[in-house]
Length: 97
Image (cartoon, rainbow, N blue to C red; front, side, top):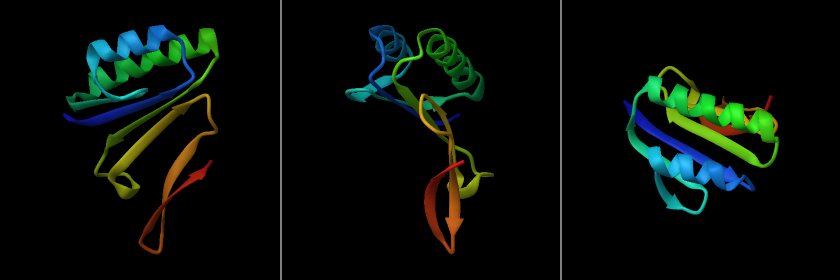
C-alpha cells in the first residue's frame, strides 16, 4: 500500500463526489489516499478513465510511489499530454512523451 494522489482540473462534479468517497480532498481538486492498494488504485483510475472517455472534459493526473520507477514515482494522465519522469544527471524532470 502506498500514498496515491489525484489532481483534477476543470472536471464535472461527479469526479469530486466519487474521489471524496475513496480519498481525502486536501485542497480543491487534490485528493490523497495514504494507504491505497494497487487494486484499489487501478479500480479508481478505471472509473476516472471511463468517465473521462465519455465526457472528455478537464484533466486528471494520478501519481503514486513505485520504487522501481525513475524518482520512485509513477504517473498517469487524462486530458493532458502524457508525461514521464526522467533523471537528468541526478535531477528529476517531467517531460512530455
